[in-house]
Length: 278
Image 1: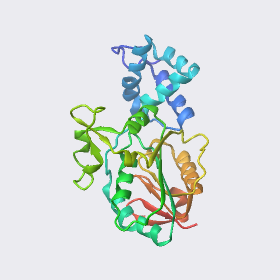
Image 2 (image 1 turned 180 degrees about the vertical axis):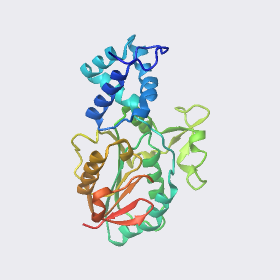
Image 3 (image 1 turned 90 degrees about the horizontal axis):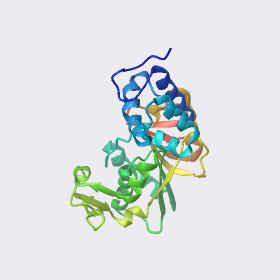
């Protein structure tokens, strides 16, 4: 017999429905949902049920399995996209002070960076701002940032590059020149400069599926993404990132993430910054 998680809710939602959500999201994206997410799952998916006029979670999940477009909406609803400009600022300080100067000293003429789990674009645009703010940068370097995410909605936001004044408030004065108001913006918004946009290429990517890019990358920044996967999937992803990095390249993780069994392949530079050594 199905166990109703809350009989006072708008939609019929039982324990078996939640367990089914857990299995579907894991199969589709590799994301591992804990039991603590029962309420979050209900609140986020309830919007999808209202949109389609469905009264039972079981019926909605049948629809998800059968409909490719709704499967994308299902994943978008359950993914978390918390980010801001210059998040974990020490990472960007290290890139400016150590990483880029080292690349210049080794005469790299092609620099490729991957922001894996880019959310609404703040991270890749921060990387672009750091790049353009570098002093004594050699001319003629081919520089590009690949920005990927599973959620198609946040990618649209990143491509538009329009952010609220509240989002932009923490940015220091040396970087505010990269944002301006134009006809696309509301009174409390600004749009990112076309100069930064040219550096960043947004693509939808499911990390559990095939990766079309070949690499090599000099930097992969994947912060607060691994925490949504179980340990087996984390280990698998780190191994795949290593294949994409050139020797000497950097992998940057979130503050609560680690390399696990792959740590011997990297030099730990501190603050979850790792340099590939073989």
